[in-house]
Length: 234
Image 1 (cartoon, helix red, strand yellow):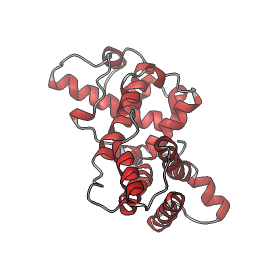
Image 2 (image 1 turned 90 degrees about the horizontal axis):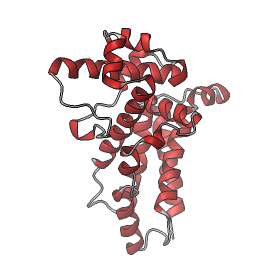
Image 3 (image 1 turned 180 degrees about the horizontal axis):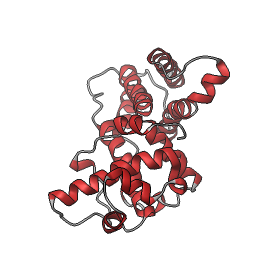
């Protein structure tokens, strides 16, 4: 995403627990603490560079310099810039999925539970513009790199269990319509937040309003919740 500063991206970069890190066939063998720290610095630096400049615009020299490493170490850990891109992309997906799974909706009324899931997706996207930038870039490549990943499809298949459960409870209680396609609803929920964050600069300019403030995001959150719950009414 053009204009995202290094400091902003680094401060909002998702923190992965060991369980969230992709396990792909490319996963590194056990390494020393020093090598692991170098690998992590390269990943952090690559996230900043890729979010700012995309895959094509990023340079291995610049990533290595930002990481305080050298190109030899980068290639030793990742093999190529393209493999590094895929690793960063996988980690971004895994971090989001990990937080998504941590959203507690059991025990909430169906409408409240759905509102929490909707709000989470908007808020996560707003907190992580680097995630939006990576997805936009990968779509420019027609998911050529993501298609090579065994981890990301597994993370999102089946459709998030929490959403299925909330839909089922709402339908059983008579507060949600029957026959809602969980995949279509999930995509709509993501789109309502993603488009807003991805286009906040142009939208702010067009409408003469700052759309990246807390007040604006809160207003958008309320609107999206109303839209989703309105669709779900019987």
